[in-house]
Image (cartoon, rainbow, N blue to C red; front, side, top):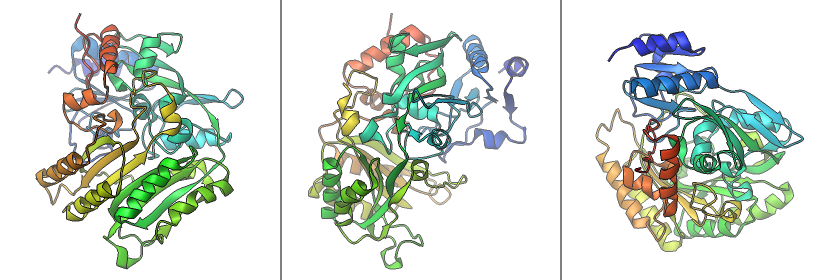
Length: 457
């Protein structure tokens, strides 16, 4: 392949162009998840929207494969590519906060923690996910399920507008009145329609939350009862229940290391005293092995992260209708039988504000889904070069858990094929997305993602 286009990028872009041989090439090509050792021809750390437009235009003109990354947390590894060009947004971190109007414009290179910390100085918040290092670009376009999901809905439910560079290299403003079809599509349709260079979010008053980690011994009754309590709790409470072996951490009594546990991540976005009352039934399910729940400033809900941690896992995302004692028994049976470094089934009760949005209002159509479930087997590729056993374990447990809801959340999809992408966009959502794709990216330039092909014309 000719490398003339790399020199053109150097000439045209304000941002830095990185190639193999540059001192920071390996750092620039690494992504959050391990297992992806891809070597792009060039990585452009764009400086602004004009740079983005130049890169997109060059990719369209030359046919070079394009990957777009914000925080590099794509489960499928779409943030990096072998050969080709990576458009890296991580340097675009500008934010403009309007405390009186309760809105903020933010660039996609910001992480959830950076954005949350910035707006918290005004006692305000927008909900993202449960990991502080995730880039706001990817999580916003995919939907955004996190610690405020039942109180304020998905991240896209607080998205008011966006600036998007289309496949033609044009910078468009899109909102409910301007380019409304594009605005509908980017709220859940991922990066299929362009590169978002700025987002305008709604802000909510939020000084503190009562939250943190609650570790309980896992039995079928504890698991089922936890889900029942979470579903009946007020909307202020959002929970993530991880059924897994208790980790060998200092705060866990040694005699419980490796034994089945429910590692619950909890966030109550309301009055602290009322939060303690709401959390009492969870603490009463069993004697906690560890209780780190406290009232804290909202940004502290994101725990510190080890930047060298790059997990590798076989995983599957899905929705289930309910988790009763029988389902809980199945989960425990499989967790205890796994040979993985860490086997986990994650259960996120939905509902609340998320469910009050019409299913056709955005490209995220799973408004009636009740429990998001992620099954994962983490392993060390150095000692497990063949993950077949772990992939089979994930597939079998997922099949056992499957109920009437056949959907999938695009933000947690791995590289699982077109059928699974289709499951993320049920019914007429898929057809409408393909029409929007045909209007804004008919040549499918933006295909390094959970791809939605353009409708045939």
